Amino acid sequence: MKNIFFFLIVYVFSVGNIFGQGMTVNDYLAKYKDFAIREMKRMGVPAAISLAQGLLETENGNSDLVNASNNHFGIKCKGTWNAETVSHDDDEQGECFRSYKSAEDSYRDHSNFLRGSPRYAFLFKLDPRDYKGWAYGLKKAGYATNPNYPDILIKYIEDNDLEQFTLAAVNEVPVFDASKYTDDPEEKVVSADTNIAVQNIPTDENSLSSEKGIVFINGSKAVRIPKGTSLLAVATQNNINLNRLLQINDLNKDGLLDRDQYIFLEKKQKSGARDYYVVQPNETLYDVAQKNGVMLQSLYDYNNIISNAPLYQGERIMLRALVNGAVAAKPIDGSGRGLENENFHEVQPKESLYAISKKYNVSIGDLKEWNHLTDDNLKIGQQLIISK
Image 1 (tube, one colour):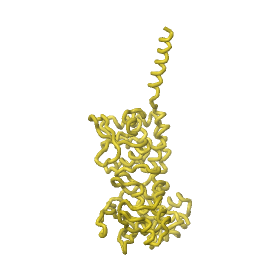
Image 2 (spheres, rainbow, N blue to C red):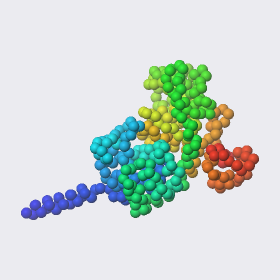
Image 3 (cartoon, rainbow, N blue to C red):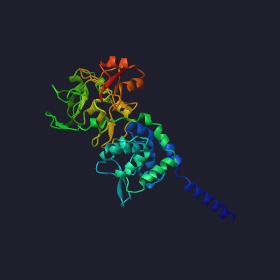
Image 4 (cartoon, rainbow, N blue to C red):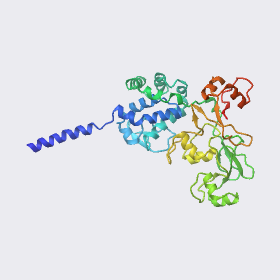
């Protein structure tokens, strides 16, 4: 009898421990708030909104879907998804949902999903602190079918003070001027010698207009090399030390090229010729670096990406650093090289010379002198030297 009683006690405590292992709201916030804040700084999705959606979609981190796929936002496969997937019952049985290697990848894809879709574009015109506007806007854009979706998000935010996480990043939200991208297509041109399609990357020198096989991508000299060519042969033909060639092209070892690609003959730039690049099917971060003439390490830094992290079709990769919400672009001098050892600021809508002088603690007189300005009038997108 005593043994039966003992085993009953053990059973009760065991069951209690099993059912007590689920995550709480506080557990979820402690574990994932930094991802939400980081994504707000990277892409502008309010951290409070991301966390509220994550809490709702994952049932505070306990749902079958999140446990099976690290999918924190219930994003389905759609036609553009070509990475891992899982099957999950939602509106219908056995629907296809995106699967991620980590929660961080899910948070990144969520930001890219919202930023990259035209139907959500109007949300990014709202004040990031306007969580009610975002909540109702998501429903309006069709993110969820539940008619109470906005009210549920708002309740999560207000009951758990999620707005504090938005406020932690509100001064570092990136500024995107949508008008700059309306005429920025991913045009295709055909290489005359290899008859393969290559990306026409906009640069300062009408990039990819070649002379004797030499092209300029983002101001750096490169050459189109066919599949099967030895990198040692490329180095020898162009009178470059092999180790230097490997370093310039972010490669670790010599070998035969497994595909046609551009190989740089001089150091790539730290920043791209435009703000971001949209990932194409099966591309790696290395591919993005080579197509845009940007150092691979810079792309890791700008995008908070760890080594070997997968990219997803449609994902936006920043090609420039974001500083205080503005893209830190570098003007190009006559040679096509980015100017070094000077800091620049890109003028934002409704921004005055006085505001910029206060922002960087420099005088209006110095700004005018360094930038050869004759009056206080500025243009959106204008690059200003803000220090010497």
